[in-house]
Length: 385
Ligand SMILES: [Fe+2]
Image (tube, rainbow, N blue to C red):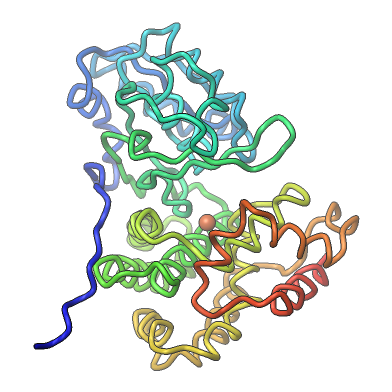
C-alpha cells in the first residue's frame, strides 16, 4: 500500500469579480449582497483627495444607492478608526459597507461591517478575546493597491491606542464580494507600486515555503508568484499598463488567498518587529525582511524554494536571492530605514522579533530560526538606519 496523500483544507473564498472598469457596476453588487441601498463607503483620506472616489460614488448613486463616506484613514489602521466607521454604519443604518483603498481601508471597512450591529468596540474582539458576531453588515472590498491581499483574508491588523499592533481574525470579517478593477490601481505612484507589489510577492513565496504549506494552497501561491514576477517591474515603469496592473492585482489577490490558508514566515516576523519600533510602510519593511533572509532560507532548501523559483521563471532555488535583490533594485527600492530608526539598535529589533505576537511567523519558518540567526538578521537590518 502506498502512503496516503497529505491531508489539508482550504478556506472559503469570497465571490470575485475582475475587470478594468468593473467598479462602475458596484451598484449591482450592492443589490446582490443586501436588501437596501444605504451604503457606507470606507476609504482613506488620500484616495478621496485623489479624485478616485468621485466616479465610484456617482456610479453608486446613479444605480439608486444612497452613499455616506467615512474617509478618516491615514497610515496603518487604528482601533478607533474601526470604531468610528462602525458607528457611522450604525447611525446610517447601512445596508452595505464598501471598503475602497489599500490594506488599511479594507481591514477597517471589513471589521467595522462585521462588528457594527453588535455595538461592541474593536478591542472587545482583539486577539480573539471574544467571538465575532455571527452576522454583520454585508461588505464589498475594492482594492486600489496590489499588495496586502486583505480583500481575501480573514486576518485584520490594526494598532491600539498605545501603537501596539493587534489582530482580529475570523471568517466573519471576509467580504461578501471582491471587485478587482485594475483601472483603479494605475494612479498608484511607482514607489508604492513597488512596495505593495513586493509585499504580495513575499505573501506568495512565504505561503508555499513555510511549515504550514499544503499542496492545495501551493498551487495558488505559485500562480501568484508567476503573475507578480512577470508584471511588477512593468507596472512600476509603465503605470498605465493595464495588462501589468491586472496581473499584479490578480497575483496580489491570489497571494491573499494563499496567506489566508498558510500564513507567512520570517520576512513578516522582521517587518512586524520593525513596525514595533517606529512607523514604517509594511510592504517596504517586508521586502527588506525577505532580502536579508532569503539566501539563508535557500541554503537548506529541500525543494519548496526550488519549486517557487521555477514558478518565478528561474531554474533553481540558488538563483532566487540574487534575482529577488535585482528585482528590488530595478523597481527602485532604496535600502534605507527612516530617521526614527536611528534611535534603536539591533538588540531592540531582536527583542521585537522575539515578542510573543511575532512568534507564529518565527515558528512557521521552514529552516529552524535560532537565536543567533535572529540576532544576525537584526544587525543587518538595523545597519540600514
Ligand atoms: Fe505582508
